[in-house]
Amino acid sequence: MKKEKIKNILTIVVTLVLLITVIGISYAAFNYSSVGQKLNTITTGAISMNYIESSNVISINNALPTTDNTGKKRLNTGEYFDFTVKSSIKGNTDINYEIAAKEESGNTFSGKNIKFYLTKVNSDGTEIEAMPPKTYSEDTTSNIYTGRPSDMMSLFVGNLNQQGNTEIKYRLRLWVDESYNPQSDNGGLVYKVKVNVYGQTSDTVAEVEDTYCKDNGFNTLSDCMLVMNNHETSVETAKQNITNKGTPDFSKTATTDEGLFMAEDDEGASYYYRGAVKNNYVSFAGFIWRIIRRNGDGSVRMIYSGTTTSDTGTATTIGNSAFNEKYWDPTYVGYKYNEKFSLHENNTQTGYDWFTNTTKYNFGTGYTFNESTKKFVLTGTIKQLTWKDNHDEIVSNNLYSCLNTECNVIYKVMSYINDKTMIVKPISYSSDTYADAVTNNTNSTMKNTLDVWYKNNLIDYASYLADETFCNDRSIASGSGYLLSPNTIYGAYERLYNNKIPSIKCINSSDSFSLTNINAKLDYPIGIITADEEMMAGSIYDTVNNTYYLYNGIDNWTMSPSIVNSYDSRPLVWYNRAGTLTPWRSVPGLNGVRPLINLRSDVQITKGDGTALNPFTIG
Image (cartoon, rainbow, N blue to C red; front, side, top):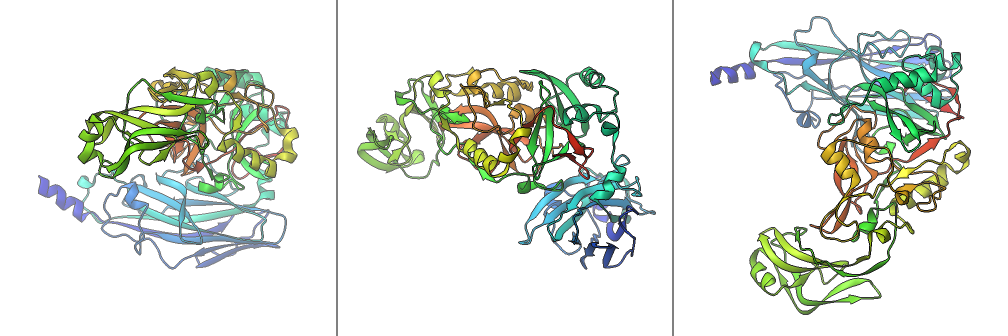
């Protein structure tokens, strides 16, 4: 029986052939000029769009089921296809385009078993994910271009902007999904797909956009986002219909467009987007944003998403930053912090494993504290020892160490657990009380990063922005909130990791950062997303979601403290680890920063319907 299975697997043949076509859509803007050539040009007056295919095609014989990790890395001849979308724009008109796939007739293998994977290729050869691996499925609801057939799979929607010559290179890979079981076929199966590119100008998009809001007097973004999905006749009807949907299952990722749900925030009923949302794009202040939710007072919370609706990866951030460059006290989980410190020898012993057991570190018989540098220094007899070979000597003499001769926290070694873990007493120069730890005196690295960006980019748009709360929830589920041992567990860890019940209420005044809160005062109305908002949008711990609207393929900070881990004396903050909500990021680490702002409830839309091709436009 086992030999027969092996024989069947080895004789399966799947040939993947990529046929390229360019079709110019939108008769009001483009004239269709040619099909199926190496270089296809769509031209109208001063606008030109070129679609250039490389000489390589995908042609895989004797294909076998493949994991996504393997398929995404394929670089052999015949395993990928490169093509370029290019424009030379001489006017004030952008070109929007869609890359879509259509199966050829006569296929003997189902596209439901074929993974499509699309990346953008940078000039240095590095790749950024444009579309995560997906099997073929017709997108009958995404007929966004006049004349584009609905029986196709949308791969990517992009924009060629007004910055002169614009050129974007893409790479497509196809493979047989690892879940396919080949036991029932006899090999020799064939799969062919045709990839088309559709283009039209931004001006043409306005001819086909959903104008329901404008036609029915819903002129503010706050109201339009509520009634748009189902074309309700009033905002109150829309609110009731959304509320009637109930609460989603937050223990699962949201991989489809689940639309809007309701939850209470500190100001009332808030309406938030969840899943693979397609109509929450906003163009404001020269940038693209995605709406997260309508706040309880009607203002609209948005997250930064780059400069075009096709941006992904690092382009959807303002760069990388540490949350805080300092890390040896619980106060450093704060968006602002307080260094009212004194010497503490923690009475509670804790495990410690922040070391390599075969590396030689400095161990001493005593220590002093340098008042000028605020650091501990080893004294007495100092030896270089390894934990694996010398732990008996280290424990019997209760030696001190911080792995160096000078450090911010020093440890008195008390006992042995195993070759990789020691029991220690942390000794620190740190916060005296929980109230001290959550007092907001000094800007974090994160706050400084956001404030500088705001001053450089949004200062002239302040009249559009609402004064809303950004919650740096330092409420305590267990632990002290100021000592290094035992662990401090913050509220978001208990809610999201243990209970899977997010909240958008902010418990403590000292954590509710705004322009007007004297206990947690901001200089500018800008912050970052909370881990609770991430979960409500569709992410959970330990499961990658590469389809919900916040996914950008890289790591991004949240504002939510997680744990102060006594095993390494480091404060940890929740972050989005490339689609997985994760509580284990040490504050000096570098992650992407996606600013969060709130538009006033009375801000009006000048045009658009919230789609990638035609985002809501403000101002």
